[in-house]
Length: 117
Length: 108
Image 1 (tube, rainbow over the protein chains, first blue to last red):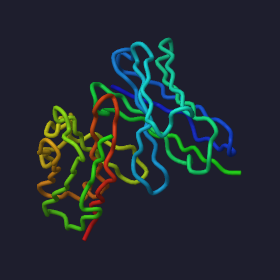
Image 2: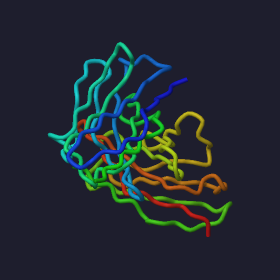
Image 3: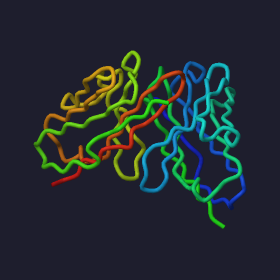
């Protein structure tokens, strides 16, 4: 069965960087893209960007251009999200999700990133 | 960027009632690249419907999606206790994804 398992919760200081991982299993990793979505406390879903599992091509949401880097490691079927220069309003649960076509069919369990001095 | 507006913000209904959720796009959504998700507290979202009207695997047939162009609807024919949750619509165009702000369906 398809599973996306994310790394654990993180606490970071403002200005620091965070790297969240998303390990995929149960399907051919290179056949589908992975996307990242975040959700601030009590708020809605915000799309951050996506990365092709096939060739690593990325497409980032404009709000995160310059601060976000998405990568994959096809040897371990793992996708990574790195967000730099963290601010307090980056405190959120970060989700990875598989993109078989254009919709998001399987989601990771979420990773809480807390930014606090 | 296409903006998705969901209404109402909150829908208060009783179990067994019918729920009708709206998602309106600021521009036409090409090829009906419109999906719906359900999210319960503390959980990741779950895909319900894609292509505006195709139910995802394992989704009960009380959930149905309809619409085209700029106006889309998610209908829950008879609310079960487990259906009280937040629902989001999502569109995809030019490799960009946007979500609506969500509709909360709560118990009246």
